[in-house]
Image (cartoon, rainbow, N blue to C red):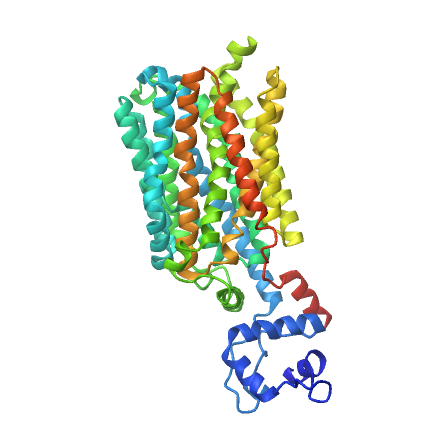
Length: 515
């Protein structure tokens, strides 16, 4: 087989003065997994089949040691399909609960602020303090996950955050509110970047944007489903289970699923493909081999150590981009219910708590659809940075235009477009770190990007609440949101030529079948 590759794809001594010393090349190829990847690429370009069971045998090159076989793309694709069905819906459910427990304070604020005597600034500070605990424990949590395994660490995260989320029902004032929010951030630290890291163990880069988009679909769905559920619990929870106020009942109930699902994770979630009982041995081997070959190719241009990842200026630039995107995300999450409630005074409209929840859900319905379609287009074109930038620019423009509308309908139209822009950017954004980071460097780098980006989850709500108290409206705060998103878009645009160094599995499979 290697001889055929040589004849069809490589120059010979007769055709060029720079002849390839083939036995020497074969020995190098046998020692290097990156050279295996080059051989696979050559096979695909020439229409040659490279099979998992027979690739690079010892007999192919006299005197060369046996190399690791190249994964059969047909087996790899079957493993990916199984992993998609088995893992993505379950992980999405976990993230839905995670995000709801993080942002349901936005619905609680409709009545909690008055009950506890919180100003808008005090509420914004408390909502944002979550991200202080989150920031300091994010990178250590992700490194621990990489070393002890996803199953144990994700289960630990979920159980502890569920207990603390339910304990929010017992806060008595401003200080206890602040304390619980910091503790919740510490407990949740590492969950989202941990899942992003976990997905890199299962899915090749050519598939990840769509997979992460399917996983991230949990965020807008948590708002679509959680908005009416949360407001329904608040509206009807007074006196239930001994809780004097409905918002207390809501916090208590919505924290329990995290504890239960954490136990389920401990029982059923495989840490790596080799641990999955629902994959055959050939499937798990092929999948891990494919990921390993990608990581080997990435090492030549990427960071593999914690220190190198954390000091990489491109990683720092991505952290700034994520800061701007998440700034808009959490301002919408924490204050959109209050903006809609403010329509009553601004436009003389009246909404019940449940109606506020239903109206709040509208932007996220459209964001869910747009996010999947935009991620699919990014995968199809193998381009990331430009897709992120365009999404962020659209979101920033929509936020600015929403401030000049004179009807609640038009305001919601532009807020919906803003949500579409923000949410469409995030799954594609998370494909950029994996083009420059591998191994423990990926764990540290992804954790750092997420931690720094989520500091805007502190700055955004606090600044927006403070400006609302100062100006008696949300306009100034939303202008700041739009400005930061523009900065994020400009930086993201510089990544538009970042290569996606993969052989698309669908093309590889087609070449295999054709041979």
